[in-house]
Amino acid sequence: MTMIVSVVLVLFLLFLSDMNVGTQKSRTLQVGLRSRLDHIYTRFNSPCFVEPDPLQFVRDFKGKADQEIIGVIAALLAYGRVSQINKSVDTVVGIMSQRPYDYILTTRDQQIARDFSSFSYRFTKPEHMLELIRGIRRVVRTFGSLEQCFLKGYHPGDDSTIPGLIYLMDHITRDCSYGHLCADPSKKSACKRHHLFLRWMIRKDEVDPGPWQGIDRSKLLIPLDTHMFAIGTLLGFTRRKSADITTALEITRGFRAINAEDPVKYDFSLTRFGIRNQMNLTQLKEALI
Image 1 (cartoon, rainbow, N blue to C red):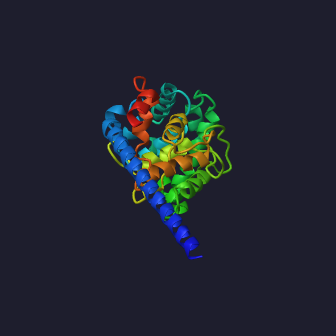
Image 2: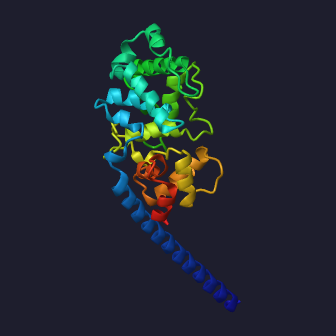
Image 3: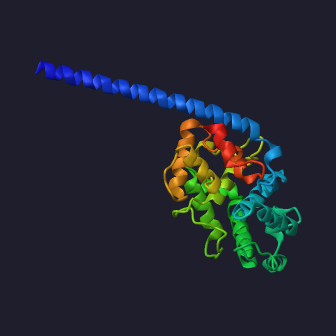
């Protein structure tokens, strides 16, 4: 009996030793990956790499009121080819005469309908833009800003920014039809464009303007598009085949294990590989692996 207990104890100690070795190896790999990610961030997280990202339109404005309005419009239009995305956002900025906040609050529906009567971008038609602008105006008049509406649904104890995003989008889209323009963050969609908007608003560095204050950036989710899906798979953060909200959460957890305070920190610099013509995922793989 004593011998059996001794054998069991030895096996248990060997098991603990293997666990410690595995944990130490995992930590070493994470430190190495963070070093490579930080190198890519330092190299490419720069204003000179913003173009052709639609983020450039948000950066063109200095006031929070204008930034959040053009930000949500630019983010929601961010599907398809980037050159066409930028063309459509530039059209919106031109219609609003470089004054999105004033335009939305002071322009009558009939005039907005006339201004956007010839607007067309893929699945987004004039009536969708009219409803979006009306929804934004309703939120701004009710809460004072998109930020304040988000904060009504977000609490510091939340695991992520999803509750605040659901609250905000529910108030923007309430009782309206937006076609392909707005996804529902309470369902299975990864809502890449919505989380891209939150990254622009909440993070503040050389690239992201971050006009919203006091929201923990560690709660942000990766804006999951085809580029980030490929990168998350390459890094081993997910084995899933569909780019849905579950996959977005898995990839975010992978980055959070590397950088708990700012898991979305590397999103901009990593997605330059694939967005910019002279940078591709093969080059990124060589830099990371």
